[in-house]
Length: 310
Image (cartoon, rainbow, N blue to C red; front, side, top):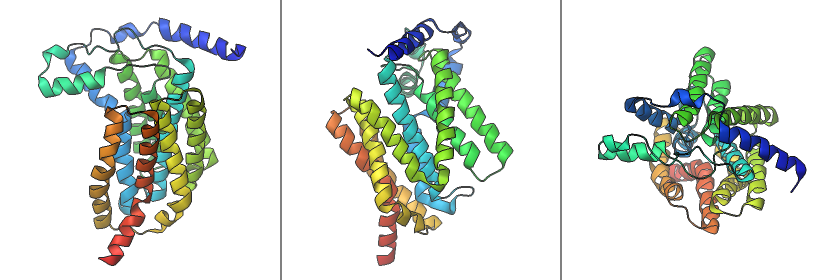
């Protein structure tokens, strides 16, 4: 093994297994507060980014403060977060805290709420760094820095969400605090790179970087998780290169944007939630994720053609 890599793993292992002594502050929280953290943690989940960013991309500039190019950039931030999270977790292979698979107090909740809480408050697999914290820093941080709305408001909201999403992971017992700190730091550094490389002026560069990171992970870990990230990022890069500029030139009315969203969410959201809930084989995961993200990016062109013929 490469000495430098072995040293990094040992340092991260010591930190991630011992914590930093502050995790005890989150033990014994009231069940109502834990359920609240379970809801807050959804703001940093992959499904939430898919629904909100795909919808923002489809409606284009009909929403104040954003447009299709900007939404594509934020989608690239989410894909970069996915690629970084899967690649780094596969690199370090560090465990989550003991009890990460148990939702404290779930037996005291009614059926539907219990199912939601158990799903949100438990996690398996490797835990370093926190993907939720990393993604929140990239996506919510990117939105706070680039949206054309009141600067003070967006920075306050963005900072609050990044903080709360990270803390929710510790409160729910699915990450050590050091995992969250690492996620924030890596996500912040990645956002600085993406803003410098292209920002919302050139989302294609963001997709390219995300694909390179995902490829690095897939080379060493040929499994469904890494192939999903690779398929999604390559699907974005290829489809944007083929049709991205044409999609940006499409003028979308509020009515058309709503129609695209009403059609796109069930057509592409169905396969997405299948991938999210059921882990298929690597080949299917790669192909499906590529088609889903490509579909998101080219759908405005389909809507434009349909509108011209109606």
